[in-house]
Image (cartoon, rainbow, N blue to C red; front, top):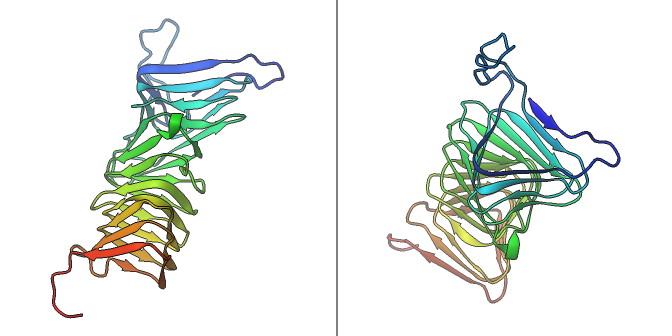
Length: 276
């Protein structure tokens, strides 16, 4: 049900590192492992609570290596006095037919994705709520790739603004707060929904549907839109180029108003009709 280091003054540093294989955190009510072969254990299986890991010593760390997987069975907390780190190639999996949650708390340091962190929410109709804010990875290489038919929900505002890229190849991404991305890429058939909150990004490719309040594209990067964007506020371009392909949806963008800064370069393609 949990691994806790005593939270008292002077508690020594602990280091937990999962280098390969799978660490499964059991969910509440989930049938635990078969313990019938252990002397003195009367029950064949155990029923557990939502597993939690607490490393409260100063500078204590939790690391999920690049060849390792963190499997979620319920709603979990991992808290460390120091860094919480996901190596390049690390995977978080939520494949049960229930909603899951993961809260990551670094008391004095940061939660970091060093390279490519894969998050797989396998089951359609389920949601993994991720409660943390990612810091920038080594040399700014941190990125997340979301897969699976389920939804990933950010519980914090601007959960991944420092990551180099966030990509959704399947399913949906939702949030109840404003979100900012350096680069955001979505695939056809996916859904990004932040309600009436603001969505801000530098560059990327949006092929799925997007719902937000105000949308702002910053800096000199390029944004390509091939999906459908429904805004309750303003579509704003402060820099760079925007390409809109209306071959799939027309109109591709609906908003109260559109503002293009001087020197920006909007371009519309995919129009096959006549007139207008």
